[in-house]
Amino acid sequence: MKKALIIIDMQNDYFAGGNMALDGIEKAMDNTMRLIENALIKGYEIFFIQHISTRQGANFFLPDSEGVKLHKQFDLRVGTVIEKHYPNSFRETSLREKLQNKGINNLIICGAMSHMCVDTTTRAAFDLGYNTELIYDACATKDLTFQGKTIQADDVQYAFMASLHGIFCKVKSAQESIIDHRTNEYSEILMQ
Image (cartoon, rainbow, N blue to C red):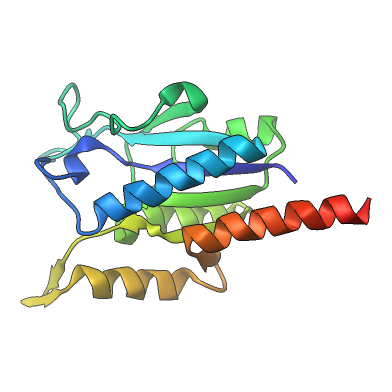
């Protein structure tokens, strides 16, 4: 079963000192690195999605800025970098074509922000017919405000994961995902 790890927008602006620092981004990065290690062991394709803002009035992920760069922890040689300009990682990018060319129908998604690009990409993957795992502890978000009310990042995270789980994807922890993939591999070996 061919799989791909899709890492969305883990860029400098989302980390401390960036223009849009997120709650939980360091934990998300730690778990993303574990997912990369597992993907390399399993031979999964790895895609680093990089958002470059072209929207009028944008204040982060600006072209040619330090904040737009993918995080320095990533060894970009182990995967493919795909640039995007919209929340949906499939919109006007080569992601779908690259997945089709490699015969990949199973995705593992992580990254930022949970309530924006992660949510939009996960829903688009469902619409395109992909089987998707979303790794909640390898995602990060921020406080949101609506009609004068502040919704804490932790509540935003749980609300979006709850709304996606079941129909659009299976929401798992990094540990559950890694163990499931190891268990499935051993089961396939035993059945031979």
